[in-house]
Length: 197
Image (cartoon, rainbow, N blue to C red; front, side, top):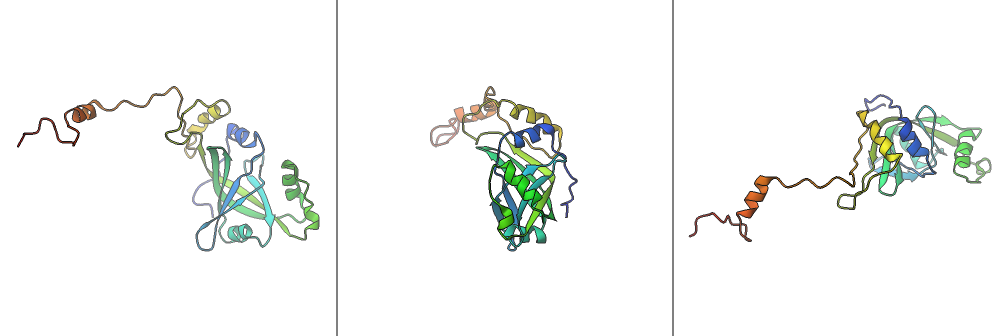
């Protein structure tokens, strides 16, 4: 199931942002009742732009993607985030190669070989990218340093949505017609030039 969208290669500046530091993304799968199920994950961005994750067979996320491979993964940095949407392919990990790569990436010392679980990798093919590099509406805006500014260059990709408010951009002035309308009304909202009765 591809949701009708082709595979979307990740722009180099986007990969740079995703891998600049250790991040713990949130994976969303679709539960049997249609509700999203969320899990904090270890993840590696592979050279081809796919996202590698891993879980134990039998866990809810495994059963969810076995039934419906559509997922999204959100990488956050405060109010800034990048969400990847796509589909997952399951791959058995009998020699623990993938989970140990993830473990080493995150500096963990867990020994998965002694836990008695059967591991399976989730290989996510990215089909849409959404980024939010803006503060919440009404909060002080600021200019983003690199690499955030570089991500704006990715806006030429149709499926990449970027919202950035520059600290130097002033709020748009009200339309003059609006000002004239307001200036001819009293406190109750009654037009000042309305006939008196």
